[in-house]
Image (spheres, rainbow, N blue to C red):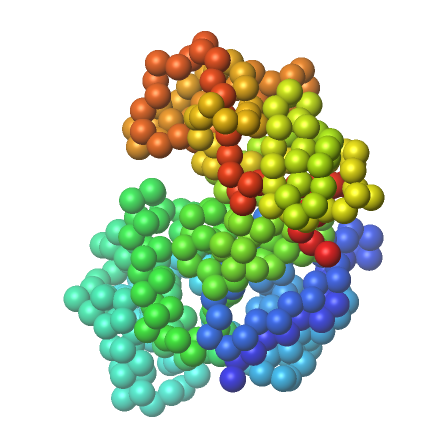
Length: 362
């Protein structure tokens, strides 16, 4: 079993610089967990603490029920795949993949079987006798992953493994990692990335890190559809969720908000009479807007257009000091710049936040 548990984990450098605090997280055997968050939020630091490459200042780390705080990295049953491939350039693919097993003095027959199995999973069999310089970036990354697989660890750690690849290779290698996970359903994987597509497509659960702690944990769709707070709402999704200031004017099973821009938004968020008049932010994702003659959430002038082919991004004039409102509409709408357009949305697509927290969260 490779259950992993973090309890009250924190990290402080030089006794003064606090990077992470109060990290509580349960990761079950077979899960693929993705850490995301802004630069400097501690994603890689947390991963390195799990690996044993950074000391845990506070709290405990358990793997399979055993506290690992003071256990050396080599004895934690963990394999790590780094951003850089870290392959030995003078060794063949086979030698790179088998190196750790040779150092551990495993029998040659066991080493050969492990390498052949990993190479078959990663479609590297025909490259086993090549040097890294003869491989593409995607193939080199697969070799680095294969080097982890042969060790048969309890937990796999991936630290932004695709960030050095170009766009096409990222897609191909992302699919390879997804297939790898399917082929090893009992393996626990923790994956750090700044790429939302990787997070949304690979993760069983996403851990959003911010402000030295965890902002929210949930499945990709939970975070997308039901963010707990404004940070997660705007961090997950591209372009970011629009936040429109307003005031609650009707309460009940459906809540109506009069927006500062003159529009009106209705949300299927339950509120009470005590919340009448509450100043809130209404959240609407750009892709949840539609052009309609109904009750407007936004009724304004298109200031800028980005025609991307399959979708078009419309930027609406915003009040001074506010970000523009963005709508993401299917198809091509290249001729609407300067026109007045009414945007509406469905109540089920509307979020309401008060003091940064979702009113859905009790």
